[in-house]
Length: 276
Image (cartoon, rainbow, N blue to C red; front, top):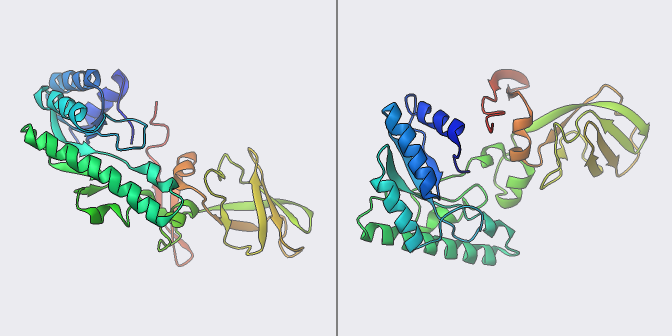
């Protein structure tokens, strides 16, 4: 999802090759040279995909000849191999109607397709064509361009992803405790935005169907009910379907797998803090 830049991260990427085939996206020739030099020195080879900007205007080389030229640099650099091209058409998620979203995705995939064809015409081996995410997973794969889909967050079925793909089953919850009942209409919980952000979409309370609003501060969540309720007491536990897993999971140390109301597994979140 982002570029691997800087000696520390490049060294980590290179060392990982002894355990798994971990690929990276690139959009800069100088970074390609740095990864190649580090990999060659360690006696490994790193697979790289050139990121193509198909409309999101974040990272990525421009479609067409700029991507072809960078793919050629990757292909010719010792220590790395050209694994393919990738894009993320995330800008299409803001389209106001399904028809406009479809059209925007088709435009992005056309740019990607023509760029793949241009690379192959230049005798550059393009094996992986990666694109599509959870928010476009019901459309992008059917357009016949990509060989790999990047959908990941959909597994959690959070409020945000369900707004893009309503067939998803809710699976990611944060459990909080009621810490105060100032009024019959207001509940205070111990999950503020340090553990339950309200980014993108507001979390949904699984145990309180009559919530009017939910706002958070650093260490408090403030729940306003549609009608007075005196049944919920201080010390009670409330479960919230996460609003956006991407902004929530990294705040925690573990994921707890629940089966039939019992903790069945505990998975450490090993990637937490690894941006450094």
